[in-house]
Length: 266
Image: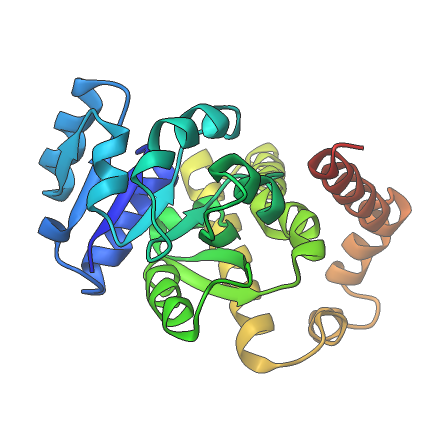
């Protein structure tokens, strides 16, 4: 299997690194294009993959093609590569807001392109990504397995209805930013109480990491896990009381609703 990447930003690098690490394919079976030779030289040095400045070449030589450019460039890039496409190739999109129907239209209505729409997130950079995935009707079971091996390379993935993809944007695609803000705020508070900043970040980040693993691995409701920490009349319930008083839950819900609306173009 030959895999091509058009675009090589952080997300593409995370995907490529995972694919190589998990031996989905060898580095020599990956072809990457980018807008500048300097970027390609860096990618070639870091990941040992093949590179080119020609997007059409990537499309022509790939069995699986990942479109990893910014969303506003999709229409332009697809026009460049459309003549090199056929109905055997699998195309993976990582752009928010670009529907399967829109992607099919860009390739031309007569060509039955096998399309996979995804929404990964930046924790893919450390192998802990979460990716929402949906397929069009031309994607076979073998195609799904091949795509799944790629997604497994940099984290976890779940198949969702396409109507849920905008919700995926808010709950996982954008949510690392919310978590980073939470970690930063906790660290700031610890610094205010006298803890060195580097140590504060480590305490806060490890607490978030450990708490997330408890949700995923223990199978308990988050509310039950929260109650396990809150002793009667203790320090934790006092902190929870203040968070509730300041509207933490409501703020998160409203922020995510705004994120989903933005993804939908509302």
